[in-house]
Image 1 (cartoon, rainbow, N blue to C red):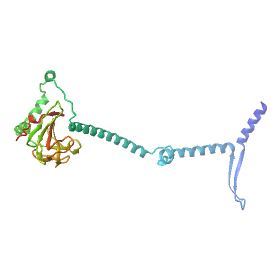
Image 2 (image 1 turned 45 degrees about the vertical axis):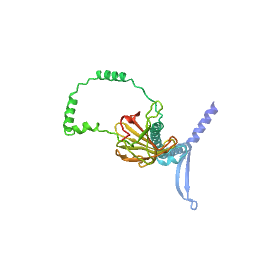
Image 3 (image 1 turned 90 degrees about the vertical axis):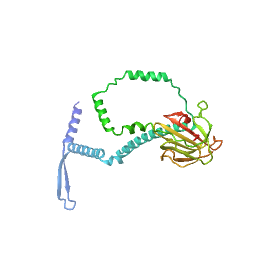
Image 4 (image 1 turned 180 degrees about the vertical axis):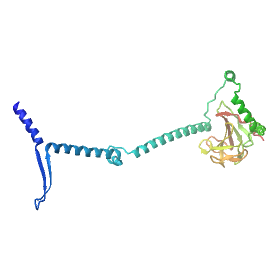
Length: 290
């Protein structure tokens, strides 16, 4: 025990022993600087200096762009670009999905692959009556004020607005004999009108061209979108005079009749009418014998 205590005292004494660090001129041995040091002071000062440099280095790396040059650290600019690209990719995927659905719908219209839906007319009427009976149709004070304001604004346009929806007339695209009638059982949602080759085909109503391309089975095809949910389709044309996005007027020439496509057996026009996604018989609205 005594020897152990002596060793500890020697160690403490060594730490506290004073030393003198002298800096001399080598030629003249003139003393320039001198420091009084102990082993404990040197250890403490060295530790403090090391902690200081480590702290400064950490702050420089953490708070400056220098950290981007150290392997393992990610760039903030790269993270921002990656996030923007992720959002753009998601948006593009949504657009592609919408376009695919739109093209699949157009494809079904072109191929006639549309399922018929049977409606129970009486059940629909009863459901509408039931819903109407549950709604309070008495106008509120705000509604009455709005109605008076609208009546004043439309005072001089009353007759124009009342007749605009009733003047919707369909123009016959061509005149000729019907070789194939509208038949839902055979999924022939159109009428085939026999005409001479290169006969001008006219738009049945005002609208915009939403499809104007060549197809293997039906040749040159043009589709017009009209108001009130109406779509007209013209197939087996020999040539198209309008492209997608063009605005056309009723009676304007949009194509010429022909015998194009694998399903065609002679010069004729395959004409379809669709209303809100459902096929309708064109002969109910158009006289092709004019």
